[in-house]
Amino acid sequence: MIQFFQKNCFSKLFTILVIMILLHSCKENKEFVSNKKSNKETVKKLTAKADSLYFNDQYDSSYYYYNKAQLLCDVSVDYEEYAYLISSMAEIQSLYGDYITSEALLTKTLPYLKKIKKKQIVRNIYSFIGDNYHNMYDLENSIFYHTKALKIPGNPYKKALVLNDIAVAYIEQKKYEDAAGILEPLSRRKIVSITHPEFSDENYAYTLLNLGYCYFNLKKEGALELYQKSLELNLKHNFSLDLTQNYIYLSKYYEKDNPKLAHEYALKSYERACMDVSSANKTQALAQIIKVSNGKELKLHTLNYIKLIDSINQGRQKTKNQSANIKYNFTKDLEENLELKSQTIENEILLERQKSRNIVSYIIIASVLLLTAFLIFYLSWKNKKEKQETIYESEMRISEKLSETLSNDVYNLLSFSQNTDLKNEFNKEKLLHTLDNVYQRTRKISKENSIISTNENFQTELKEMISGFKNTNLNIIVNGLNDIQWHKIEKNKKITIFRVLQELLGQMKAESNATLTSLVFKNTSKNITLIYTDNRIGIQKENFFFRNGLQNVENRIKTIKGTLIFDTNERGIKLSFTFPL
Picture (tube, rainbow, N blue to C red):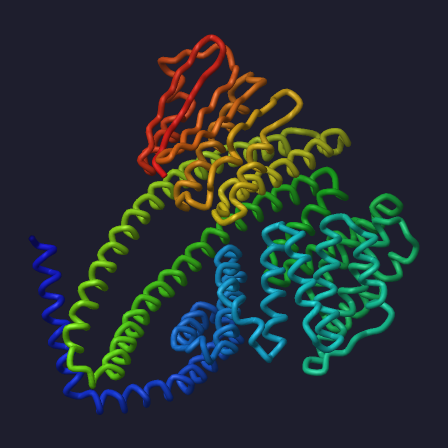
């Protein structure tokens, strides 16, 4: 009754508004046209303000005004301005380390790229996408989009920048021959920027440095000469970021033949790294110092390295909070703007149909349909949001557990460095190996808790995740996965399937002696069933379920209205769950 009453009230209020709109149609028409004309001027002013704030490093405020401006854009006409504004917002998200959101924003610009006449906007968008993939360690896609940027017409300097990005991706893939093939032509002469000539030396020095690193790894002559030329340019202009990398590469070069000189360059790299805000450069510099140090100095730099890692983790958390605040403001403004746009569309409909005798009846019918659709959409959105929040809380529990594990590793590492003679070469290598393990595990945690693709790539990503648990002692058999029509399954259900399998396989691999695991997917007209079995031995049913954290699996399944059946025997365990399509 309450909902019915609300619907009737809404319809009556809507009818009154329609009558008022009809009485003042001429006046409103003039105002509407005037507002439409003023939008472009408003967008220009907001864009100029956002640009000014951006160049003064006020990214939060800049993002706010970029967002305000893009919401006012008519994308059917102002697509160039829209693409510029969205790409600027994406760049700010990248600066905050939120590469997923940045990529999602840039995707909005793709339908308009063929229409845009200012090709530098298109090139920048492709380059931003390439940079995002690089930062997310997806180097193949990074090279793909940087190559697309390279195909956009531009001056030699712009192309040189893109070629350097591609070469760096090849270097990280250890494809030094490919990288050198790109960098050698760029190293023969300095390419001058027409608009920003002061950047030309920096880019040229960067090219020489990367080429020298390729030669060093390929054991070719000329690496030292390239390092020195790059160093001269960097010292001349005091390019702190590039000087740090310069000194690190020189330290690596002299590491075997002249340890004393290698140590001097490592210290110089750290001094330079401390002059800028790049934590990544400080980390690299400290790692190199540790490699060429011993005794008390090694302990000191090891402690500094651990403190830096802790500081980076705290900084990332602050960045996440800032990014979350930006997203909140973005959503709030978007909702307000959608309401204004909805009112504008209703006014246009009224203006076009104001001569019709039956307009009031049409509007009432339309309002009832819109209200019904809105209620359905709202309830659906609310349901999905609750499910996503439940899944998010579960993800946070996993992240906290893994974080505690890493904290223990760091504590053990600290104890080892304090209580062990690090002059001993074996102990020294063991310390470096353990540090590398901590770093790799941190990377792994980040990857495991990253966003799951739920588009057409979901099936491939699911297969890759399952395959990642296979090894010489464990065989995983999968049946029926290709028979499931994944495109018909909701996004949150796909995420639940992925995370449940990830937990089951992870626990099995870490806590059992199983050598064979089977995953069977079954599809009926209304349900999907997944059956998991393994051949682990020594199971005690009464406490196995809760001790191994499978309660979390059951909670996930409940969020998608699924049911769970669990059984154990002497030959292993069997678990199956079913959920509706």
